[in-house]
Image 1 (cartoon, helix red, strand yellow):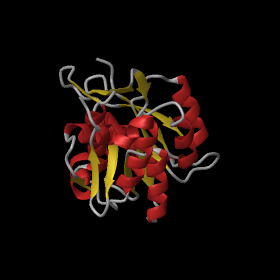
Image 2 (cartoon, one colour; image 1 turned 60 degrees about the vertical axis):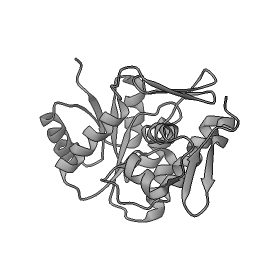
Image 3 (cartoon, one colour; image 1 turned 120 degrees about the horizontal axis):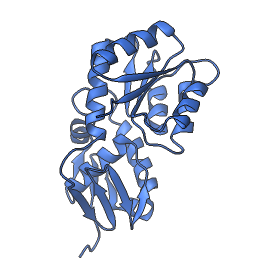
Image 4 (tube, one colour; image 1 turned 180 degrees about the horizontal axis):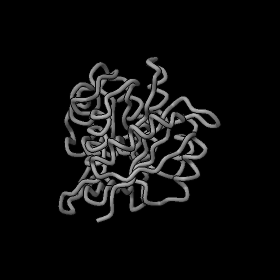
Length: 228
């Protein structure tokens, strides 16, 4: 089996080495970039990168711009590293498609644990089971979503969110329960990040995005009107 390949993007060479060593101890293969532009070029040339660890503050091209470029054609899982603590900075990252945020300084062991958890969520191994409802098909094993037969490219968190909605069709889901089940125990941010992801998910689903309705003051519900 080929090793999981992770693109590590940080302008600090010592930081890249630290991350590379810890990932290597877990059996992961690392590819390195010193700025966002270099990261985009590497990612475009290498079709086997499974996950990106991306710093925010870098010369030439920062992490946000690199992510914006990559998200134009790929939903690869992305963990963003940041020394910033401003809520708006985190929301900006989630709007662009970040899957996880880790603040600096951080524990390398926590980082590798986050990497392993995100890889598990992005590569569902259940035996070919799929969810279908109202023209939306979610294939867990292939980690693929189609709407009326047309492929829709979702980020890992968008896929997980849609799966949670479809598995709980017709049920009112609070933001807190969505955080617990989709973002898991290791997320300590604002529940409003859910609203950002729901907005992006609705847009990607087109007309089917109307299946996700807002329950004011509580959360969301996924339901299909007059479904046969």
